[in-house]
Amino acid sequence: MQVYPVKAFRDNYIWTINNETHAVVVDPGDSKPVIDFLRSKKLTLIAILITHHHPDHIGGIKNLLDQYDIPVYGPETEAIPGISHKLVEGDLVRLDQLSLTFKVLDIPGHTAGHIAYFDHQRLFCGDTLFSCGCGRIFEGSPPQMFRSIEKLTNLPDLTEVYCTHEYTLSNIKFARTVEPDNKDLEDYEKLVEHKLANKQISLPTSIGLEKLINPFLRYNEPTVIKAARTRSETPVSNEIEVFATIRAWKDNF
Ligand code: ZN
Ligand code: FE
Image 1 (cartoon, rainbow, N blue to C red):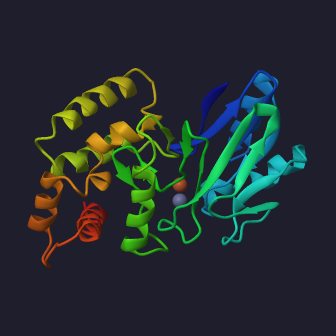
Image 2: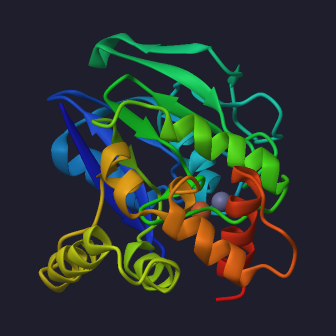
């Protein structure tokens, strides 16, 4: 089993999970790089998984369906052309040819119906969680996004997190503004700079690592609470307000 990042557009990763013969693809915003990858590895596509409705995550569905007669899984509450299986929290997606079963998590906030796929080892979280950052709140509210991020924070530390954009280094610049004395963050910045300079990608990350470096998961840390209190013009008295303050800060960074 391998998980491979097919690159698309400027900074998207279309994650492809495959064994020697079959593959499943997550959020194919574009079809061409996916088809090129499948052909080069002689893989048969068996399913498409969609996390949310933004064009850079669904743009390739139609062309892939022209070539493959396969199920397309996606959020029940978002209108996405091509979806055959509509999913809500707790649903299971069984992919027998790959011996994989994903559980669906509702994680609204970036979009109103955003979902994630979790198989107890790996998390495909679309644009909700990024390494050292989180998605912008386009359709939800800060408390809703907070609960979604909290849900992901509570997954096992060893969970591999497959984010869909290479935003890590710019996210680190912001995180260092929030927590200038976080040594783990300083080390992580060096590691990511080294990886990118050597044409590696920064992902996947893990829940355990993100809890050390990602200000959006660190709403209980005294350093992050203090930074939020200093930044905010209104009183910051709970986790949600810490999170909302950091999110609004990043929106204007
Ligand atoms: Zn998006
Ligand atoms: Fe995106």
